[in-house]
Every structure is written in structure tokens, then in C-alpha cells.
Length: 467
Ligand SMILES: [Ca+2]
Image 1: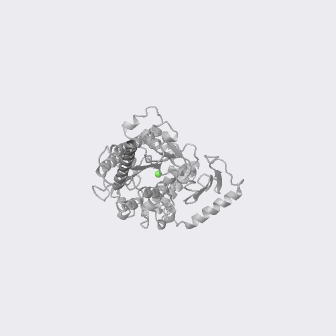
Image 2: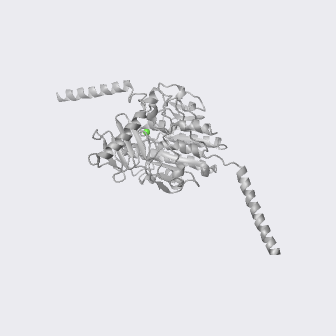
Image 3: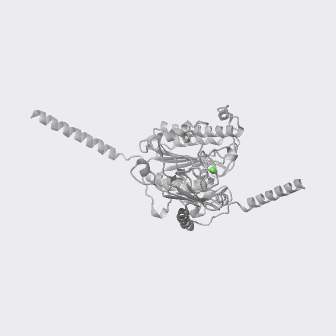
């Protein structure tokens, strides 16, 4: 009898202890996860250790893939800088609001009708910072209303557009002034300074949930790197490749510094991290490789729009896995908003989707059955494993590829599969009809004029030489 009474008491006690723990956990609201986005510039699919290229070690970037999930079919909606950023910041195909070309950033900037991920996270109580290359206006003819400080970022440290790595142009440190500043420090190297500022900002803002966006200038031209990184590659004799390697090594160190800070703050389990590139590699100008993919930056071939892309959230997203269905940078905004406990409203008219249920396995199927691109005369649609496209360097008529069997887009199936061509053309036409006209021409008129003059001078020089 006594034994039964003791057993009953023990059960009762352990039940109350469990209840107490549950109540305690419920009383302390879980902190919203921090959001961290690293964006590389012009880094091709064929670079990085985790992408299968051991030539330039990238242990810190690889560590994100190791602690998280790497997308083998990660896309961007733009084949070069500014359009991809417009899509990333809004979660919408940038062609919906005319942001088809880089020239929009020069003419004005990201349309003021659009709401950025930073503004959306701010309304959920986040502190926000952008450290790196903006390239969404506010530096050309557009006014300060296009600068990051007026697009949801509390702080901005970086350049408004493309820049040299030393003596960066159109540089703003919003702690000093909202206006463009001249950098006179000879030793100032953007990638290293971005890491320093990001780490400093994290220390100052560790108490509340934060959103940190780090769009590196690396690996965009011009190829420039400090000696300390060049010295890491004595075995690379090609001068261009050596500088590219040094730049990538510097970016890897910068990612490592920021991630170390997150760990030192004890926040790695509450930080959702993305690392991706803004477009494919322009191999001829910088050596940036696209691995098995066909085409380059500024084309709608896979080499222009399929990029290194990975995500980590320790304890939430599976570690050391790949995810092999197509995803796109437009997915980052809804994924971050949902992770932050926010709702995605229908009137945001997003094209991206929340990836977390797919990554954790609670959702079946694919995030996207169909993806679309438009870039002037070039365009593409991916539907299932088939891709129909018109791209620079191609036949000028629509070509059809099966990416599951032919990742290198080498065997045009258009003639063999006319029904598939018709189906995909119909889908793309319907999507295309929803897109806006480009809000700025592909090249500003002055640039077009200069190019025309250069062509005429070349022609004349050739004619003179022949006569
Ligand atoms: Ca780029």
C-alpha cells in the first residue's frame, strides 16, 4: 500500500515538474530569428569548394553549406546586378515593375511603389543594416529617396553602385553622413571593411532581432586584391586568376568573421543565413567559372542565372544536405518574413514562396513548377525539367532543353518536341503579358551613342588599314 502511495506521489511530482517547465518556457517568448544575407557579385556556379571547385579554398562559405542545406538548382531572376537585387529586395519578378536593366539604378532606382524586405522586417520589430554594394539607385540621377537608408535600412555602409575596391566611389557611411563621401585611406579595401563594419554593427545591435544584408563587391571587376591575399596563391601563375582567387579568399574571410561574431554572440541557433550570388560568372573578364553550365553573366542560359545558393538555420534546417528542386532568390523575402513570425499578405503579390516547409519536409512537392526570365531580347522559362529560351549566342529562335538530362544546354530539342515548345511558349507569353515595360532603356542614350561612335571608329580604322 505504502509502495503504491509513493509511486503515485512520484508520478504526481514528475507531472508537476514537467508542467512547471512547460509554463516557464511558454512565459518566455522565443526570440525572433535574426536574418543574415550574404550576396556575392558575379560569382559563377563553378566556384567555391562546396560547389566542387577545390582550387580556391572557401572554408567559411563551405561551412554554411555544411551546417545547412545547399541548393543545387538555385536561381536568380536577373542575369546581372541591379535586376537581381530588385527581385531579392521585393520577392517579386523585377520585370513586374520595369526593373529589367541596370540602367534603372542609374536613372532613378528601385521603384518607390515597391516595399523592401528591410521595410517589412522593420515593421516586425527588426533592426536593419546594409553593408556593401546597393546598386538600386540613389547614386545616379535618382535622389536620396532611393538610397538604402530610405528603403528600410537603419544603417548603410557601402557603395551605391559598382566601384573599385580601393578608393571606392559613391561611398556612404550613414553613421557619418547620408551623403556620398570620399575615401582617402590608401589601405581601405571594401571587402575587409565591410566585414569590420558588419561585426561592429552586430555587437551594437545584439539585444534585439536584427536583419543584416551584406552584398559584397567581390567578385565583380575590377580585379583588385591586397598582397596578403595574393600571397596565399603562389601556385596560380595566371595573373587574372590569381587576383580573382585573392578576392574570393578575402570574401571567404569576411563571411568567416561575420559568422564567428554570430557564434560568439551565442546566436547561431537563432539566425537564418543565406549565401548566394547575384548572377553567373563573366568568365572572359574575371575568370569566374560556371562549372558544367552553358553561358555567362548577362545571358538567360543556365550560366547566367543558376548560382551558388545555400541556407543555414541550426536546429531548424537539415545540415549537410542538398535540396535539388528549383528555388529562386525571390523566395528569400517570404521565407524570412514567415521565419520572423510575420504573415505574407496576398496584396504583396509576391512571386517567391516560403522555403522552410520544403526544407524541413513538412511540405511535399516543389516550391516552383515554373520559373520565368525576361532580359530585353533574351528570355527563358523553366517548367519542370524543360527550359525554353532565346539567349545571346544561341540560334535566335526558341531553343528547348531538358535540364535533367542535359545540364549544359547542349542538345536543342525544339524540332523534336514541338508540343513541348508550344506549351512552354504559351506559359511564357501569359507571364510576359503581366510584366511592365522597362522603366529605363537597356543602355542610357549617352552610352549607346558612345558605343556607336566606337564601332564607327573601329570600322574606319579597319578600312584605313586595308586601303
Ligand atoms: Ca553582378
